[in-house]
Length: 114
Length: 115
Image 1 (cartoon, rainbow over the protein chains, first blue to last red):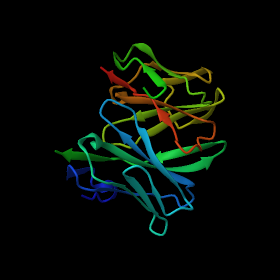
Image 2: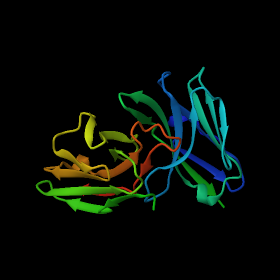
Image 3: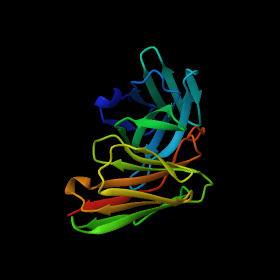
């Protein structure tokens, strides 16, 4: 299953399928990008990040792809499980003074059906 | 637990009340943040503190007043709120600069309802 940027807030997939969550960002000067997962009743939790000088980064069952030409970021989840059901946010980080300040996307709700 | 603890988890207050939200982190971080999360809207940054000094106030109304007595504690004082202020208020912490590979660590939030 695949979501189309921030305009499709819900993605429904079957357990075992691969999921692709997309994100369009706006600031070409962003230094790095982070994907967060937010489960019901909890705060966002870091999943994976990627620096702006990279195109791809892999974690455990997750892969983030960065296409700077079209300012597009995607999160791929392999063999999606019911525990992956959550809202997923992308965030672009740009240095501002002494801090990196993230700008968050609206989020995509991933629903995994057993 | 993420290492960032927020209390209370839920709060219902009237528009004339004064209440405070508390955030505590035991991660050794020296930057702390308040975010507002409303339904169907992106996370909104409210305040940033680096080494107890406020470095960012994102045009937040004065009815929200932050306080950071030390690098481990952050408060958000609330007074004369409006119903539209009802939201999930999230606290986060990071190393100053926020440039760590793990980004921010968020608490579970305080669900605020203004009646």
